[in-house]
Amino acid sequence: MGKRWTVLSVALGCWLGAGFANADVSPYTNVEAYSALADAAEGFPRQYFRSSNIVAPVFQVNFWDHNAVDDAPYIFLGSVYGHMQAGPMIIDARDLSLVYADQRYENTYTSEVQTINGTNYLTFWEGFHTRGHANGYCLLFDEHYHLKYNVSAQGLNGALADMHEMEVTDAGTVIFSTYFNIPYDLSPVGGPVEALLMDSGFQEVDVATNQVLFNWAASDHFSISDSLAAPDARYGVGPDSGFDFFHINSIKKTSAGNYLISSRHLSMLALIDGVDGHPIWTLGGKRNQFTDLSGGRATSLGWQHDARFHNNESHITLFDNHGEYTGKCQNKCNTRGLHLEIDPSALTVKVVSEYYHPEQIDSGAMGGYQKLNNGNVLLAWGHTPGFVEYTDDGRTVMDVQRGKIGSSNIDDMFAYRVHKTHWTGRPKWPPNMAMDAPHGTAQDATIYLSWNGATDIFKWSIFSSNDPLNISDYGNLQTEAKRTGFETSIFLGPNSTSRYVGAAAVDKQGNVLGSSLVYDMQTGQPVLLKSAINSVQPPKTKFYPKTLSSAGVVGGGVVAVLAVFGLYMFRRRKCLHRDPESARYKPLANVD
Image 1 (tube, rainbow, N blue to C red):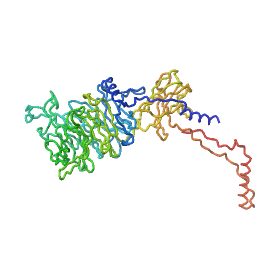
Image 2 (image 1 turned 60 degrees about the horizontal axis):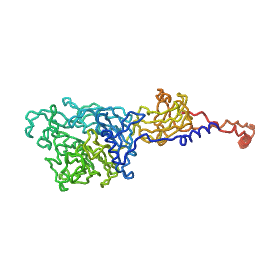
Image 3 (image 1 turned 45 degrees about the vertical axis):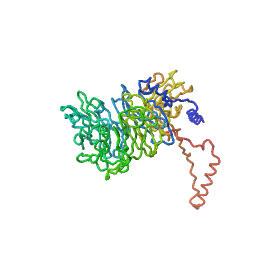
Image 4 (image 1 turned 135 degrees about the vertical axis):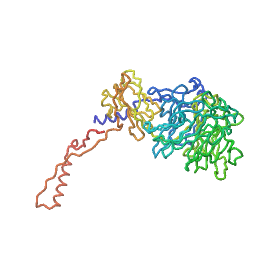
């Protein structure tokens, strides 16, 4: 009876004996208060945690129709916080709490899930930014956040992969943008004869070997006179940097092996031949070849980003900045998410859909467009630091800021591209724990728990004991609390005076995803022992009946029917006279 009551009391204590509170800062819903927070935080609304040194964003939610948004569980960003470190971020789409951040990099601009041979990878570019382009590396991490592949540009006199594009193909290749200086005569556009041109292009490389499979440069196929930019400091010209006449910012490989590219400074999309690199067609800009069936609205794209094919490559989506101005719309709004339908044989194009910012904001740089699985559209608003989800017909269903909008741009506070999709993260490192322990024990202590990168956490289970070696025993389960953000705080209450604690992250099915080290409440530090909590379920009791005596055989001359009947009567009489206690099933010791 004593053991049964112990199990019952532990189970009740899990739900009745503890209070818990959200350790995260919830998203703001008052834009004036949020703007004040941003001003007080040097333009970077952020929060800190007890159990981790990760810096997380604080969001402003202007509108959110939870029933109408796409149900993909995670939002992917690239984060840069001014002088602070940058890295990829995964956000829980249900509550906008942080799930993962790796902030050891100088710059990252976006992150997303991409697939090679059926395996998902967290992918992003990292490196150093200068004058509108960058040099760095394309990284692919597996579900354990182990770096599996690292590729960059080859043969460009030291120039590395640029940050604007990192496209992974199912064939196991990576396509990225490139920027590199070459000597060039700029006199056709009013520049010096002996000058530098900041050429741009792309490479496709094998992800495993970094072998270059295709290399393309804009200056081989386009004239500097096609550019809408001027050869001055606004467009790259400096002591050691040339005129950025083309400014490639997206590349997407087609099923036929060609490449859809976007040139910001030509305000043009082009389909590039995958064999010799010549432009098969051009859409927009000075060399536009398409007839606009929408009265000029389809071919008037400008300074755009993130062009992608859809629907058997008969549709194109892109983020059309439509200018270089960032701020409140003047007269009318220009920046838009743009969905086009093209006929590449007839060379016609028409507008299918346009999506404008619900706060009447234009964005002069960066930006991204994602078509979601339920038909919704997710726009990242670039230098207007936020993202907006729309229904296919243009109704806003989610409007989120990660910084102030409608004012002067703050360097590095942006939403270049934002992606919403599925991901499973299973980090090999253990969950982190911090604590306030006024008595040096679990009594009246508050535990702070986080596990950077782990997905699918539904609740936390806390175990406490005076024996650090056996903390995982079910009888040591003290309390449980649902995950309430990146960091969940749990008040343990007055009932336990144990010195050591451990914690397990548990999914909705009750499975342990991982467990912490054992922590000493007197020091607040781990004792470098794994808590080894593999289950948070009550021990499974196994039952075996006592061995019964065999009935004697009557005699060799008794017929078989009488023998069976006698055996039945013998066993029935034994059962009727057996001691009830001796008849009970005796459970074996619990085996994990």
